[in-house]
Image 1: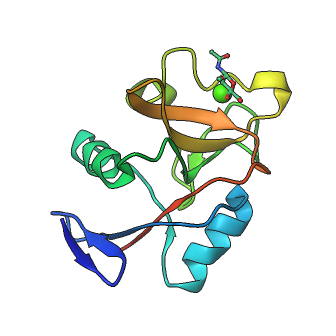
Image 2: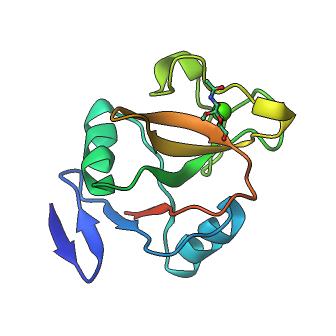
Length: 131
Ligand code: 2F8
Ligand code: CA
């Protein structure tokens, strides 16, 4: 899509920002909020594909998903529920590896892009979205 000062414009007219730095999920979210945005909410196949393209060669980026409030109940940052079967999770994910994975990411492995849960404190790139 178009790129306006580091923000990419989708056909649904949201603006997206892929970071160059790496931060924890919470710090990443703060970065977005300070810029009038939030971590990305992905609610269509088209948006999943747009974000996949935006990722380019990057293999990890935080998205606006977590089950921090209630283990196993995945929610977007706007508070809406994410039903695992209707999302773009890797087969077998989210698996709450070592009982310590409460934040969602886009993950390229080995060359397919899908969602994975990951420890929220790990530093990663991230994607913001604003309307
Ligand atoms: O590093 C955490 C990550 O580790 C594995 O992927 C490399 C797990 N995958 C499997 O166990 C299949 C991920 O679920 C986990 O998030
Ligand atoms: Ca996982």
